[in-house]
Image (cartoon, rainbow, N blue to C red):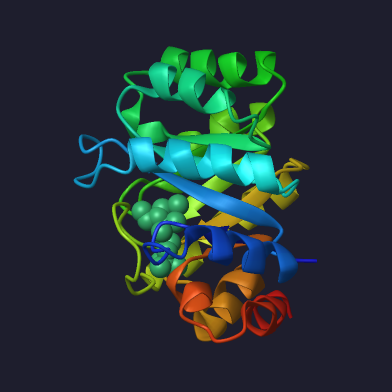
Length: 219
Ligand code: DX5
Ligand code: ZN
């Protein structure tokens, strides 16, 4: 069964708590927290996402799916462990070397949190094969990280297919999360390719009824 992680990046100002309650009622599986530091990507959502995440933690038991688009991964892991997320995902491209990737994987796991590794569109998926046995989820960016409302890059579907084939052939049991430009049309493609967690922001937040769109994305 596919799970839905709703990105709160493009949430309407002034309607945050109403939206969080409605998303909980609509049974999103996760809240996707897009942390941006203004260095790894242009926008800076760091403080806002800290506030939102701690608010959600107070009003909801739904798990937090934290996506770090930051350069200083060590500091961000510390900051976001504080909101007791279900999973923290960081970017392969923000790591200096393999040792650093393993260091962050270990740090997150040592704090009883699941760990994800994310790759940007231009990164070949083979580059992260060696880390797959140590992580819980691979987040395949299906848009350029940095903002919501973009169109899914269609060759990312083949990338998901390739990853799915590799994990099946090697009996690696991890989740594949597709993130960016996911709507009713593109959800079908990425699900067929092998993604089992779909991040969606704009398509859900602009819908009249969150439950209807979330249920349809899950089909
Ligand atoms: C982009 C973020 C995505 C994005 C998804 O950098 O990682 O999670 O907010 O939003 P939509 O669904 O609008 O592409
Ligand atoms: Zn994201």
